[in-house]
Figure 1 (cartoon, rainbow, N blue to C red):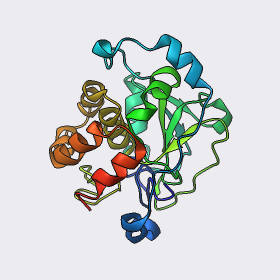
Figure 2: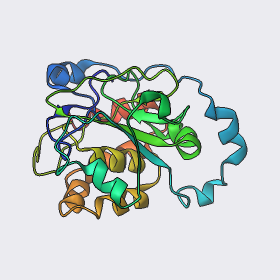
Figure 3: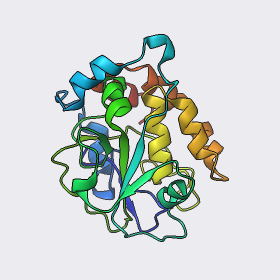
Figure 4: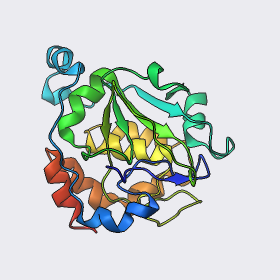
Length: 224
């Protein structure tokens, strides 16, 4: 979504993880993010390593972040997750896992269950930056994906659509991919974490049921 995550000058602040930067908020309502699914290096490996459906979600998805060092370290949710060893931080694009799913407002395709295998095999990441100074690098070896309409619960942008912090973006993506329990665990490290799930209970339930990017975009129409 080229309106995927936004930049809030606070790391706790929203990162570019949804379908919106300020300039894209109005366009996001009319834009179609359901681009064609792209092939990625993890497809073959994932097909061999995937656990049977009854066990999906039992194994955590590896989480990572590209830290552009543009937000307040004291409010940075990604750095807090790193301290708890729940996320791996990288400072160079070439260090990111090849074939991994990366949440970015620059993506043309919405995240959906169709991305589960790639995330489970190669990881799920965010671009940790400031919503006020957001610039998103090219991701030549990763799979960029945007998040649909969601409300922020963090103290900086409470109640605002799309302006999610890194942990909110990751938790939302985990819910959509069928790993809601893992999402709850990372949100539990923040006093307002549970509130994010309360604010977005209905949309997350609909997005999690959608099987493709096109279905996620259609579900978004129920809330925008």
